[in-house]
Length: 439
Image 1 (cartoon, rainbow, N blue to C red):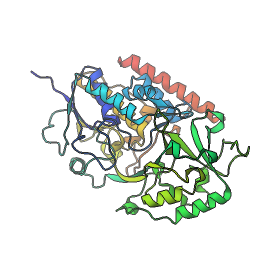
Image 2 (image 1 turned 90 degrees about the vertical axis):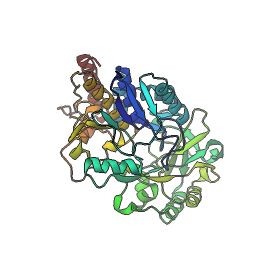
Image 3 (image 1 turned 45 degrees about the horizontal axis):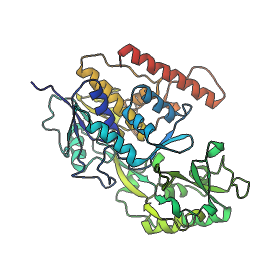
Image 4 (image 1 turned 45 degrees about the vertical axis):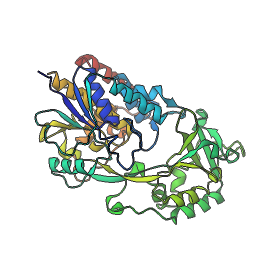
C-alpha cells in the first residue's frame, strides 16, 4: 500500500525548504505549484523559489538578527541557505544572490528528489486533503481562489496588505563619473553609491513628492508594511525622512570630494556577472514614466536603462495569533499548517525559517517523534512566539529582530557586544536542540 504523503502547497522559499526538510527525513511529499500554467502578477520565472522583490537576504553578521537567523538555519541544514551561499554576489556585509542561479539551484534539488512528487496545478480548495497533513506555503501572492478557500477554512475576512518592489537598472547605463564603489564604514566596495548635493536632493525630493502614482485599488485603507514602504510614501512623511532611510550618507566618503555626501542612493548588484543593479530601498508604485523622470534626477542615473520598474503588489497574511499555535498549526485543525509570509513573518529569511521549522515539525509528527522546542532564546523560536502571541487586535507582519528575543538578563552597554552574546546563546541552544531531538 502506498505510504501516506504530506502535502505542501507552494514551491516558493518556504514551500521548497519545507518539502526538502520532510524528504530529508524520509517523509514522502506531494508538492503543489501552479507555475508554469499560472503565475501571479509579480512572478515571471518558471523556476521554484523565485525572488520577487530584492535579491538580498540582508545582513550576514550574527550581531544582526537577520544574520543570526541565517546562521541558525545553516546549522539546521537549510537547503535554501546552501543555495544562497553557493550563488552569492558581492554585497558588503549582506548576503545577496544571483536570482536565476539561486532559483535554479533549488529547483534542481527539489525536482531531483525522489521523495518529492511535484504536481503542476493550482490548488483552489482543500477537498481531497482530508486526514492528510497539509502545509499551506502559498506565499504573499496567494491566488484569489486559494485565498477564498483559506478565508472559509479560517473564518477570517481580511487576508492581505500591500508591499512594493524596487527598480533594477543595467550596470553599463550608470554614470560612474557621478558614482563610486564602496560599502559603509569601509567594509568593501560592493555597492555603487550615487551621491547628491543638497541642491540635487531638493530637486529630487520635490519631484518625488509631487509625482503621479499608479492606481492601486484599496491601497489607502489596507496600508503598506513598514519594511516595504514605497519611497514616495516615506518622502511624504517629511523632508529629511529619506536622509535617515535609503538616502542616508552615514559611513560613506565621496572620493571626488573627500567628504560625506549630503545624500546617497545605493545600488546593489543583482547577478553574478555584475550587469544588473537594484536601487536599494526604492520600492515604489510611481507610474513607470514618472520613475524614469524622477529617478533620472539622481545624477548617476540620468541615463539609466531600466530592466524592471518598481511595482506594488498585494500580499496575503493571516491573523496568526488568533489562528495558529507555535508549531504553525491551525488551532482548530492541527493537520493544517501554514508556512512563509502568509503566517505574518516578513521577509525572505523569516519565510525560509518558518518553512524549515514546519518541515521539521511535520516530519516529527509523521514519524511519531516528539516535537522539538525552539524557544525565544533563538531567532527561529522567537518567530514562532511572534506568530502565536497574545496580541490579536492589530497583528502585523514582523521581521526578525533582537527585540522579540529573550533578553540576556544582564546589562551590556555596547550594542554589538550585547547582540553577539545573544547570538552565541542562540546558536548554542540550536545545537543542543539538534542533539536532544536527533535533528
